[in-house]
Image 1 (cartoon, rainbow, N blue to C red):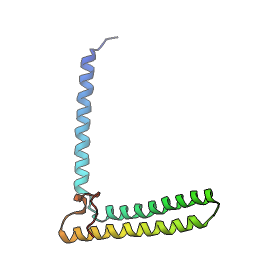
Image 2 (cartoon, helix red, strand yellow):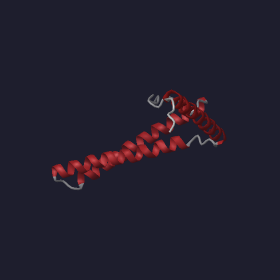
Image 3 (cartoon, rainbow, N blue to C red):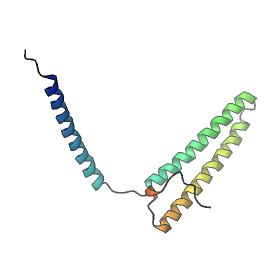
Image 4 (cartoon, rainbow, N blue to C red):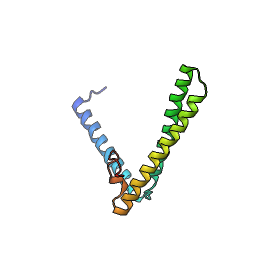
Length: 119
């Protein structure tokens, strides 16, 4: 058996990794350049996630309080109504922000998501 120099084998691995990374970068760049843009898809996904998370969190809090207080199912139903209100409010705020961005001509993906809308 022949023994390889460890330094040479590491250099060979490094060169192969660099070549593989550059090929992958070229492939990703090529695919993203030809992918059709869907400007409203991100906003729609955000709205859906906000609605579902508001309902799940408020329903979970209501369920916990019902179990703790022994008032099943009334607190959970009340909290689900609160969750619906919160989800609708977040949806309205997001829609108003997107509408303002559309009229200003600023793409929504360049906006700061943490910035509250100006009411």
